[in-house]
Image (cartoon, rainbow, N blue to C red; front, top):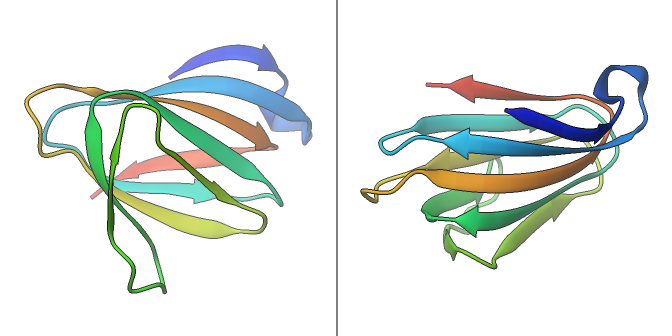
Length: 96
C-alpha cells in the first residue's frame, strides 16, 4: 500500500494505491460508507460477497460501494494488479 493523501485512520477522505501481486486471492473490506476503486494496471476477477455477479476488471475498470462491503479479488494474470482506492475512512486488505 502507498498512502497518497488524507488521513485514513481518522474517518476522513483518503487516497491509496494498493498492489495485489500475481496469484493474489483475498478481499478488500470497506469499513465505512464509501469506497471507490479504479484498476490502474493488471486484471482481476472481482465479486462482491453476497452477489452472484462475477466480473473481470481490467485497467480503467472501476468498482464501488456506498456501505460496508466485502470486495473479493483474485489475480490470475502474470502481471501484478495496481488499484487506486478513494475511501471515507479505513479499509482492510486480507489475503486468503
